[in-house]
Length: 144
Image (cartoon, rainbow, N blue to C red; front, side):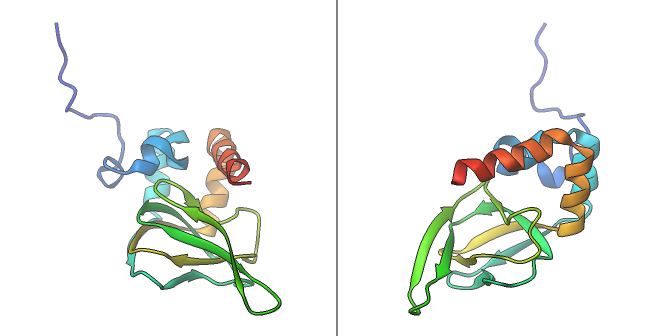
């Protein structure tokens, strides 16, 4: 007997089905109930190339999954030059948990689509799901 693979009854939000971050990113660590809880707080937005997402020394009030495009991470040097410290692609998590203030600039290197979450929602989810927190920390270590 064969079963259809295109029928989903897993409780995963429809918005999250096609999302790369659910399959390979931090959201993949969440069970359906936690994913629903986080999805209720999310907002999707499209950012044009060259627009700043986060400025250095700016207060952090949200975090995002990169859904498409490229985000350039940079630091301003004392002589006014800009040092590129990283690039982020789908399904990378944009932001550093546990930090109140951003230590880098994040800019859309191409047109970017983000799925953003309030900081408080991400912090609650880290407390509720050890696997979610583990995956966030693992991604942070991979970027070093």
